[in-house]
Length: 355
Image (cartoon, rainbow, N blue to C red):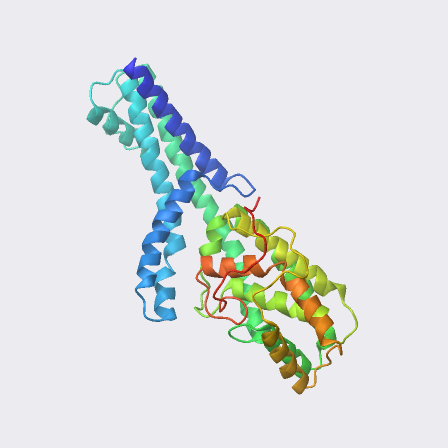
């Protein structure tokens, strides 16, 4: 009876591990298994402890730069260990005399070493299946990396280009100021069009390839989160405050942005209000908004005359992404940027578990 239990428990562990690998590497949708979650949380706890001892942001960034790559390598190693343990139980269930003997055969089969020969045709079949699983797990990781780094390169190319337009750290106010100086306020829709596509790609890649969320930019002062915040605030200012002909592309960009950030936030279990109202509070104060408007007006940018209505419209757009933007900035330990990672609270509203 004990041997049957050992065999079934081992088979269950192997099946659970293989399912985790398939859902993580192959399934083309957001799927975060318990094994992957535990690995990333465990590795993340160590790296966050290192970062907490840093005395500057640059030191903290250096402490965190290896987090995602290391976690990504630890994950398949964890799968291999779990598969080895599962097959050890199965070999014991088939009558092997000792745990040491069963584990030796399991390791030899999993790593295709061939140092230990199976003793029966049943254990031979199991050894063949274990070797196939071991090779498949390694092949999955090898195939996974090019896809992930291609998505990373697309993301970072847009983030780097934004620095030309929005400064460093990225700021919506800086972007509007530069476009005004270049007499291209009527071309802001081009930025919104580009970033609408960027947000769509971000939503797909950063939920199906979740490790990408924690891959840091090549330059420590850049971050995909703060770049997203600058673009969304710029689009919100364009739609609500600038006295220029309406361009619906800014509104489409905002919607694409907050939907993408919400999907990523939901993947990590971040709380947010799925149906915020225009009057709900945001992390940007009216005084900060007025100061930004005064600065833009002093430079000659055309602003709508009704400041109260403009503020109402701006906060009505901002409320859609305020909470998730700040939460993702905290989750990724993003560098300083105005109106995103500089906020001390995650936001307000009526949050519920994201679904």
